[in-house]
Length: 74
Image (tube, rainbow, N blue to C red):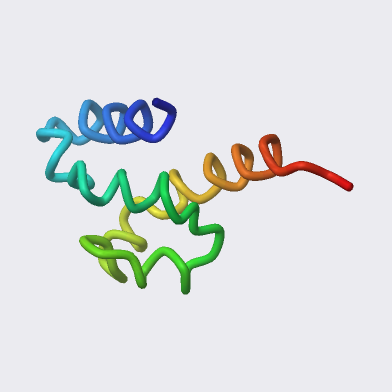
């Protein structure tokens, strides 16, 4: 839900449809693989260097926060 919220905020700010920011498949890839670096982000299907340059800085911190919060510590 947080990733959709980020996408929606970007879409509102740029006055464009949300699917043109990142597709639903792209969001699924982000949620599934949880990239925390540029290298991981650009390898995902439907994303890439252009998407990373435009929006990566908005998505990566949210993914890192989620991963840290939901990763079990020993």
